[in-house]
Amino acid sequence: MKRALFSILLIFFLFGFSACCQPETPKYVRIATYNVQDMFDDIDDPHKSDGIAIDPARLKALAQVITAIDADVLALQEVENIEILTYFNDEYLDGMYTEAVLIEGNDPRGIDVAVLSKIRILEVESFRDTRIDDPENDRRIRFSRDLLAVTFPASNGKKWTLLTTHLKSGGDTDSVDKRTLQVGEIIKIIKERGYISRTGRGILVVAGDLNLEPSSENMARLTGVPLSDPARDLPYRKTHRSRKVLDYILLSPDADSRYVMGSVGVYLDSPAWEASDHFAVYLDLRL
Image 1 (cartoon, helix red, strand yellow):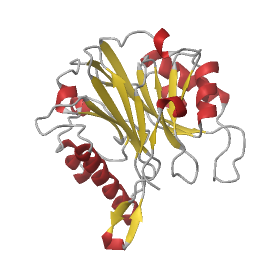
Image 2 (tube, rainbow, N blue to C red):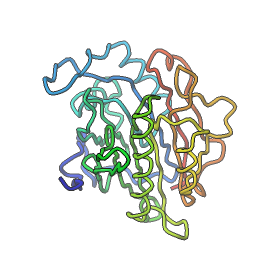
Image 3 (cartoon, rainbow, N blue to C red):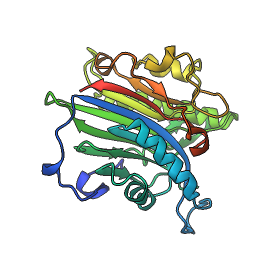
């Protein structure tokens, strides 16, 4: 199947708002990424190895964290489906977000990547069906969940794009190989789609659970695109209970020039430790 280009009218939900009634794009935009750890509903899906329903107490804790961060655009990982996402937004976030995107991906457990936004979404593209060549193992793989490209308007009449994903986890050889191939495909897509031009123009944000340590070769490949890592100098930036750094917001040169100095952070305040095994990362851009 060819990689799918989805109309925003088909794949994201508007929570009672039409585009004409939404607020103008704010000059300052807060972007966050958060792995919410197994946000499953209470309906068993026979086609997936889905887990038990998420505890309401944890949904409440997640909502407290998300409300405190107050991101305009929120990339999420490990959400089962659009139904649990819209339920969470309506019942626990009081309809905080006017738009949501979730396209069923490739994970056998059914954990998907998603986006919640207060800002009007212009276009969404999914790369879930992209085949990635692995000649060394005589196979073709796909993104473990999905790679979503979500495009938004900027206040100056330009556009900016969020690429969000949840790369293959695990430290075994096969997992590392797949993650390396997925990173290579992201770099290829960035170049082929012109998200960053040869002169460095193009407002691109890459965010998600990348399952990469800052010192890894694959992270060096991403920063070499070039993509900057504003959180690199934080005195404490661990984004997982294991004290690893797995979650990132990376910026193209054009996006980095719009970064609000000192705005990047990892949310560690209560109840972050109870809400998920990951911690949310956030920053502000002048858009």
